[in-house]
Length: 638
Image 1 (cartoon, rainbow, N blue to C red):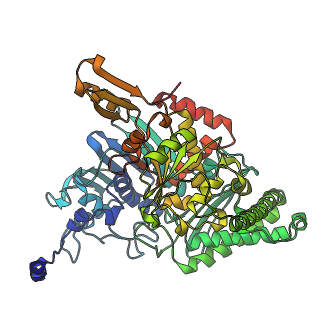
Image 2: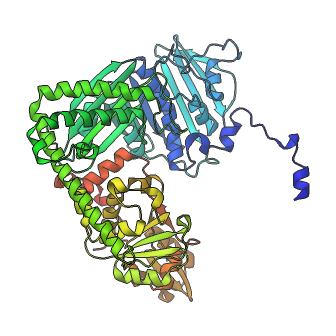
Image 3: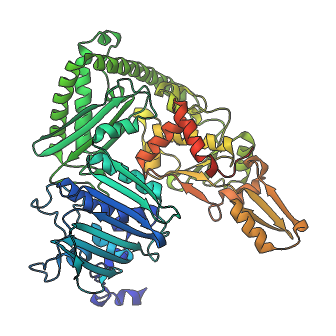
């Protein structure tokens, strides 16, 4: 220890030059080196094209997935400048591609609004690619430069003439950096569709050239957020026909929003600043909600519905069944955190609130039938809220009278530090019994489930709170629910859903995930929810036991053994209850050997669509989904 201290001197201080810092700490710039970070590379390049579109210089963007995990992004914008920078002495193209915080977005001469305000976007993509090349079409000429792990191979050169304009970027993500380098067509298509909704008029094409028959889809929405709301509500029953749509500018802030109510009980709200999804909201969202609540309450006080309640409508009442998208464009946005998840500009709250209040008031005056439908919906929501509050108060009083408020079926753990504790929510008493015997009692708690669970997609909060299948889960987690939800009171930082690998098990998992997504969203946002991955097969040969978690793995194990098949015993698990406690521990519960899958909120629009399709009221979208995906199903027990 003494020598280590003495060797700590100026010579031990490392200075990371150029893009070396990005390669050393990629997570600081793109969030992760997993599948999310890989796709983030594409978004960074596309965002540059979108910024050109925001200024009116770009109409078409093409994203192509080539073979060998190569991505190509083309646009018909102005093209990245290629002339020599006056102070740096190199081409502006090379400067943008190789220097952090170099770009044309820091003043307002070329870009009034922009998403990529950190100025690290495309240079980070360059740094994290095995190679990247750029073709710039500008001024009737084509310019080219290639980079190897962020370092220019040669200076920018002119390679031809053209009558086109725009930029083409091709790159191959570095497998030394990323855990995997295979892009998902579905993940990209959902984000590109979102960008097309947010930038009405622009055409974005996605090509998959990896297939024998290349696949192409185009996104082009002249209706902007009006069409976005219609898309989000397509599997729901709207209670008024037309989307309430406003767009305009106030105090240099561009505001666009689409609003439509459905007969469901959940709020679907997406907010954006300069095309960036502000998942944590911010001042613009606060302004939106304040305006909506104020205006609807103003009409409520003058209506017949006011006589049916002894209190005003709350924000939750007003937002029940609401599907809305809010997009603002701000010249100098102040985002909280590198992920840009929350807008901090205090002045935007008042601007959005006053603009929307004026627009909503005028709209409802002209459309009394629409406001009456909405008021009827909000009043029913208020009654359910009051009933839920009374149910919670009753539950609290009951808890005070009981010796313990934890459910009787819960087998709790000894550890009291939530960060070290795990709760297994187990389908069935049989599997629950094995899990209780096989677990590590120090840090693993078991909560067995029994009977049919409530589908919360079709229920209000008062029914959720009163449901005898969900009450044990709410009580065990300790966070409460609804307006009382507090993630800091979570008793277990790993909540693991453990269900059979069959149709019934999938249904249980979906019901639980729907519950967490709708009523305990922060559990998923903070990464506390997991799926256990039990094995499908137990293979025994010469007293050696191996487990396979898929048909492919089973076949691989059998080919490895390659012995007398009569001496090989293969057991197909039909359910968790078939495993004894020791087998359940070593395959599914032991942190050293198990496989668990963390549930994320990476694509909230896709998650929203999936839960509504699978668990909502409408049968037809669910039937179509099953028909389209039936051939892809594996491990289906019949």
